[in-house]
Amino acid sequence: MNDRIKHLAGEHGLDLIGVAKAEPGKYNKHLREWLDKGFEGEMAYMSNNVEKREDPRKLEPWAKTIICAAVNYSADAPYSIDPRPSNQGWIARYAWGDDYHDAFKKTLFGFADAMREDFGEDVQLKVCLDTAPILDRAYAAYSGIGWLGKNTCVIHRKLGSFIFLGEIVTNLELEPTPAETDHCGTCTACIDACPTDAILEPYVLDSRRCISYLTIELRDNIPEEFREDMGTHIFGCDICQDVCPWNRKSPRTQRLEYQPRPGSVAPPIKELLEMSEEDFRQRFRKSPVKRAKYSGLMRNACVAAGNSGDASLISSLKKAAEAAPIVAEHAEWAIRKLGQNDLKNDANE
Image (cartoon, rainbow, N blue to C red):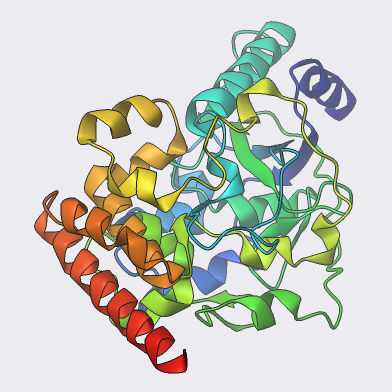
């Protein structure tokens, strides 16, 4: 039966497939400890339905197996650690193309429909992608799709870590595929490279310090202690993945839906600061970036401007400050920072 599922997965464009039992594994038991330390920050959804996250059999009483799937989204474009002009922002690789919630879910539903047709209408299937209370990375690791790296990303030996993960929970009793062994070895590149020290130790991430969390999940003011270290990231962060040796030779996806949209990789900060809310809606329609919302992206662009060293952005920052109070606070911070840099430059001349 597993061979038939692998065949169907390949037919529907899935790059990786694995099978795990619908029961708790070694990573599930760490969830409450992580939550007790407050590492989820404002991601309240992580503490909601915690019992279901700990045991998928509580998600669906008929669950026997979790079929884990992955697709490569790594488009052929630079890494965030490569040189670029200081007045350009950076958007995380996963958000360069279409929103994976739509594109990948469509792929998974097509795969599920094929399974239903193959195994009969009595088979029970639940497609899960990001929003369901399942520990995606844990079950991907249990199923052999990859191992859980020191940066807490799932890493595959050939595809690296730039992969989207999804699951199909089913009542089919399938033979589990072997779990992958950990191949991080003594490497600490991801830990050493994180500008905000979010990876406290191997396999432990404090989300509250993570640039991805700060630019996407956090709706309030970004703590000043992290702003300077955020550089010019405006949506998400790939640093811990970009420095990972397993991503250096990983193949690039040919899927059109994950190819970079115009201006989606490193957009000029000035453009973002001068963007209207309508511009935002049009530019990031069906893009993951819309998750940040207009005020959130403007807030992030202000921080990026402050770190750019480009004093010519001050006039754009003053205009951006009119968008919302949260934007104004960050714009004022950026203006002060650029003004201080200007004074330092004058003093050094």
